[in-house]
Image 1 (cartoon, rainbow, N blue to C red):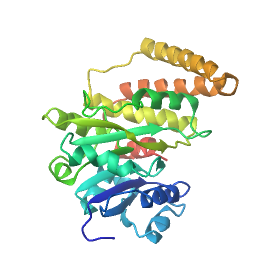
Image 2 (spheres, one colour; image 1 turned 180 degrees about the vertical axis):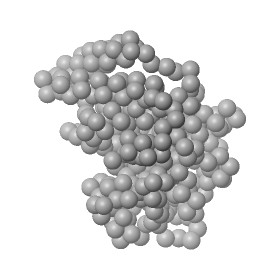
Image 3 (spheres, rainbow, N blue to C red; image 1 turned 45 degrees about the vertical axis):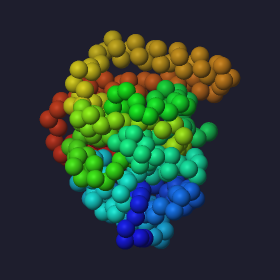
Amino acid sequence: MSASSDVSVVIRTLNEAKWLPQLLDAIDRQETGGMAVEVVIVDSGSSDGTYEIGAKRNCKMVRIAKVDFTFGRSLNYGCEAANGRWLVFVSGHCIPASKRWLTDLIAPLRNGTCSYTYGRQIGREPITKFSEGQLFAKYFPQTSSVPQEGFFCNNANSALSKSLWSQHKFDEELTGLEDMELAKRIYQMGHKIGYVAEAAVEHIHEESWAQVRRRYEREALALRDIMPEVTLGKRDCLRYITAGVLLDAAAAVRDRRLHRTVMEIILFRTMQYVGTYKGNHLHRQISRETKERYFYPR
């Protein structure tokens, strides 16, 4: 690794041995126009060889203890270790879809248009659940918005400058949505957030239904601190489950996939909104032990 890099790609990992080699290969293939790139991996206790894969590939390896893990803290560890002027964040189970992913993602940072950018997310067939593919299409459309209105952002595929991070670090207490919390903070200070559709990644989730529910519960718990005005009642939950299932079913009919996806659609939308409802109503004062057991990603 270069002692001084232009770009540091920071990857959070936990048992990502299946997809990490593909991600690292895709980073190696990037057309960077001469920019020096380093890879920083923050591993939170992998037991499947993930750490060894990163070490063999010359990545800068950072460990975070399971007891200390939060999404924001792990990113702060990685940013602290990074030497690059630009920090690029990508999940260990995301694969860049083009050779210009990195340069496209940081272009609005380099030209001063935006302070924080995030890229498109798409699924991978046949792994991605149908309803999640619908969510990707909703939140990550084909058209860029640079800068965008509002502070939506997603650290599965995002970038900001190290100088900005050094002044405004990620919240280390949130159970999720550390990206939106930081984006809201700097947006309210006048910074611009940009969505770069050209900088796409395949976001590959292979989750059990319980993991899907916990993911949305984790995010809803964090959202209460970021947007306390957003609440979800039981009627809302039932209405959104019903609407989600019907809309997804209609889309599946158009794609001639309903017979293969109908039960998956029902289960996904149920887990999504039941998890969101539980997170929205969970008691705020939960012990570290309980939080560890319940919200740790795996």
